[in-house]
Structure formats: structure tokens, C-alpha cells
Length: 181
Image 1: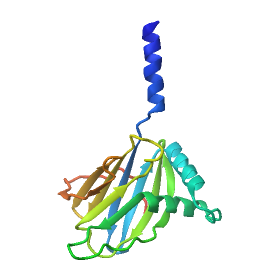
Image 2 (image 1 turned 90 degrees about the horizontal axis):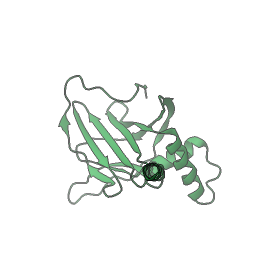
Image 3 (image 1 turned 90 degrees about the vertical axis):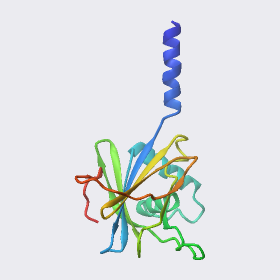
């Protein structure tokens, strides 16, 4: 009887404190001067985050479309910028361009673009996606630049990180479905 009680206690604790992960892949497209972003989340978590974001929004935002709500959430919770050189200012924030979303094998892929001019040598990444829903949220952000890749693992204690570039091994394949931006 004690074993069953302990099992239920442990199981119920796992339900109360779920671990959640997201994966964002960001690739620089010099032709369109943009960062193309593919973000993978669990649909239930995405829905919960958007519902909470809408509830907490300021008055006057009620007239937004679903795409505007999703884009606003992404702009507030996933930020990419070029780390300024000493004595220079950081680039101002820009508006993201919504591309679309699709469900695949129990996940939702969200696609959007960030206008970007110039190099991405000293890239900084901040992701607080789903932090307000899951205390143990882990956001992995992979940034691709030609034959180089940087991977950032972001969580509550470290929501932002500088991209550290490394050479991609031949045969590297993206986790995201291919969608033409």
C-alpha cells in the first residue's frame, strides 16, 4: 500500500511540474536580408501561452487578429540582436513578419522572419518563450550562418546568451520541415 501511495505521489508531482522544451532554428538569408525563424512547440503549451498573453494585454489590443497576437508574443519573448562594439549603440528593435504555422507529429512549427541587415558575427539571443507557463522551460536556439552554427540553451536563470560559432559537420540536417519563406 505504501508503494502505491508513493507512486501516486511521485506521478502527481510530475503532472504538477512538467518539463517543457522548445527548439528555434534561425537562419540568415542575405538575399532577403532577414533571419528566417522556425520555432517548434507543443500545441497545448503554445495555446496556453497565447491565452495568458491576451489576458495580460493592455486595453485597446482587443482588435488584433490571431496573427498579430502570435507575432506580438514572439516579439516580446524571442529577441535577437547584434552585440554592439564598445562605444556604439545597439540596433533598434524591429517588427517581425509572420509567415505561418503548421502541426506535425504532435508539435506546432511557427514560422516568421526578422528583418536583418549586415553580418551576424556578434549575435545575442534572448528567449523567454513559455517561461510564464513552465518554471523549468528550456529553450534551445540554433543559429545557422553559412557553414557555421551556434546553439544556445536558455532557461530562467540564463534567458540570454551570445552565439558561439562552430563549423557544421558535413551532412548536417535541420530538424525543421523545409518551408520556403
